[in-house]
Length: 160
Image (cartoon, rainbow, N blue to C red; front, top):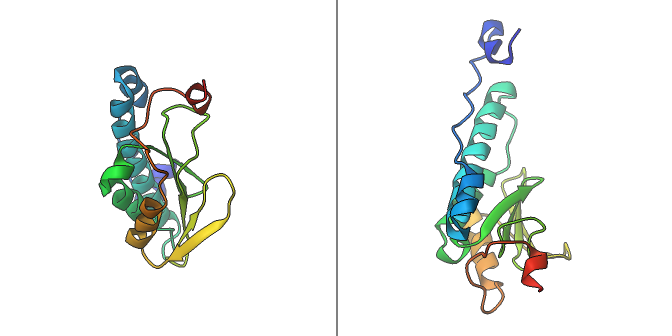
């Protein structure tokens, strides 16, 4: 049985995979395009994963990563940084290629609906909030001085 035929056993069908932006092509156009394409890609992928989870495991909570991405992207200073996720946590880099520059606090959405904000590189808890909006505000309050938009390249390139 195909995984999309789950409706045959009493479940609604899985959502179709989204059409994702071509992040590689965006990288070739420059860092601003790469950042914008990556934000769109993350939003689409995590939305699809949440919808898929709702079909496969109805009633099981799903961390608020989708809303977190939307809120962070709406914040002007964060929207200029290159986003990526790891284990549900949202990270933001000042460069567009791996290894990323870790200068900005990260946010981990918890299954209980709260959000934990961590200092970059140390894993030390900076704070815990009840909403994605409050978590993003905490990140913005702890941005390093002089942080500009993401630049093309890696963290190693920034050190040269």
